Image (cartoon, rainbow, N blue to C red):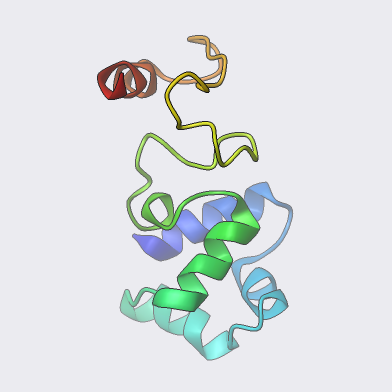
Length: 102
């Protein structure tokens, strides 16, 4: 599952998973293991990837409905600092998730 999410996010950023990983100093063989063997990156590598793609490590691993930092704003999840959202910009389950946080 990790590789599928990583691949999708890399494509959305106009690059391949291998090229993105290599730009972050991650070995090409690691990418092959993620794709072919279902492995996942650990610790520092996972954090580097999440930061480069502007999502959390949780989002990379599970594609949770609340990616963060939101819109490049790491304080967005603090109470009173929620980003403006509409049904058009996010799904219903994401809005419900934010409502439950309050």
